[in-house]
Amino acid sequence: MRAAGWRTVSKVLLASDLSRRWTLAEIAAQIRGSPVYLTQVFPSDRRHSPLSLSPRLRLARALDLIAQYDDLSALAAELGFSSHSHFTAAFRQAVRPITVGLQAVGPTLLRNY
View 1 (cartoon, rainbow, N blue to C red):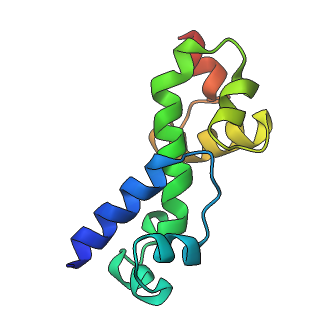
View 2: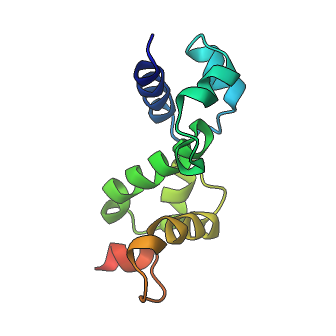
């Protein structure tokens, strides 16, 4: 399988269970590859490593679901975040590059928008 195929299979695997906290060894075992090779086929940029991809997928799913939840703690738990504050911190870190100059950007603000 080519590198793009390994990345795609990894992404599909991670997206199949967003609440699970995957380890690199578990991902590699599921796709029948080695952890070392798996890290090599992803770009070296930390934001795109196999382990950093899972939180990004969970946040993307949160954007799809956020309007359906009155209780963000329930949404955070469903998506595998340890708490409402962990979810909010991850959300703010993810949107920071596109919201420079705005203050208090978080999931509650987005839900109420």
